[in-house]
Image 1 (cartoon, rainbow, N blue to C red):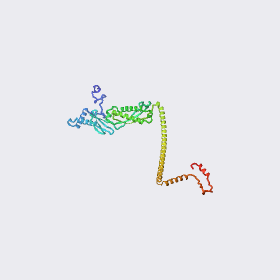
Image 2: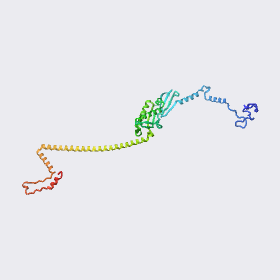
Image 3: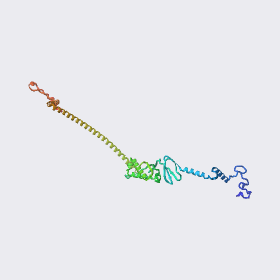
Image 4: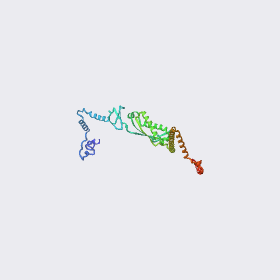
Length: 357
């Protein structure tokens, strides 16, 4: 080094006389030497002494501290907290052993591990919201866009984890296949107007059946159809068809209303005629029964006194006949001689001209 040479410096080291001919200064003092830097060996020795004070004497317990740290780490990784909306699936060397309910549980790590799927969470998959994914062909050969959402949750955590690799992709593929099948069996107008709920129910049933067949451990809780629309190129034509269908339905409803009114009126008239006929029937029957009873009474009297009864019947009959007719009685013979009979011919002719007299 330059300051270690004998030329012009007297052979002083870096802490002696400097190369500029003056002695070194302390780090913070205006003159004199500063303190010597600490020795590394001395620091290591101090650390060993401190560690000896912690560990037992003789060095035989030097392994206890690492062991205690490892035990704490092992216990920390072996205790699991399962939340109320979760189920713990305990795996031993990667194989299923048991299912743990919510709460604290112990699984000997690393021999046993725990998966905690959320069985209480309802998940949502949106299908056909963008692009041409939702375009489907109906039974009447029309193309419509059918966006829908699938809501699902875990029913069996064991089957959910071990039977299917990608659950969401499987649910998406099965529900979309079921939707295409049902839409292909339904007319476009039905799906666009009043058939959404029926289509959603059928798709949910088919999707759930396929998921159960694959043992995915998943339940489809609901399927909602979004805004079903025809492609933009034929939207106006579809709107015209929908309006025509609405007008047709309105006319059908009015015709049904008129038919119901006429049926009710006819039923009322028929009921009135039936009631009148029943009343007439009862009156005629009662009159006939009364006439029969009167005839039997007269007949019984006739058997007891034939002459008297015959005379009585004759007199009552004549009384009824004569009381309804106009008559003029002219006495002849000796007592009537000299009497000029008077016939009220105008009155008789007037009565004869009046019908019913």
